[in-house]
Picture 1 (cartoon, one colour):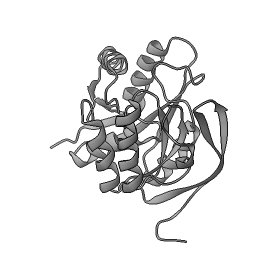
Picture 2 (cartoon, one colour):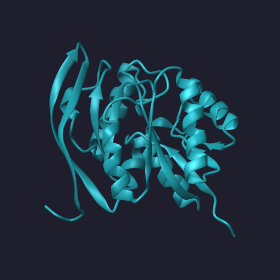
Picture 3 (cartoon, one colour):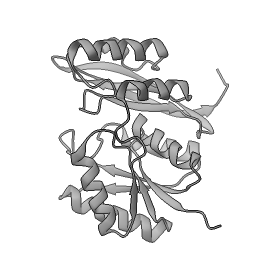
Length: 230
């Protein structure tokens, strides 16, 4: 039976990494990662911070990455990137990490259709709190690289998210009204290790205050190292 090749919209964050993992676990063959270089934080469709580190994720998983520069119309750029992935990698499916944003999901689905691809959104509609628990339980190691919501403490920036931190985030989300999985842009994440990684990512950085309730973890050094090494 011929395997189904897919391309994954990939940012290096928890949602795209988990969706890629889901697709592989369900028998699809990863052909490539598609990573968009957005023009800034104000992008309505694409993740902006730390996407250059996807090259290290690509190496850690042994999956090639196609970078696509966003030059103008974000929808048109999405269609072009999907066509490129289909042409260069031979994929017939695109996997996206949308969880709750209709704006993103519908545009990705329409762009995929226009490019001749099917689209799968494995974590669409999941319970946001339970999803955060799944990530830690399934072996995903990730950090927060920015927080921009009242009630999210900057002390969590740059630290691997543990079960205890997840439960505290869920508790704070109930109190302050933000999305516990950050689908509303309340925080950004970066995966350091995952089940598909052959090596883990090690980063060093510093916390910078951008505005009231908005802090960033600025990564100054990043490298891969063998799992199990000190």
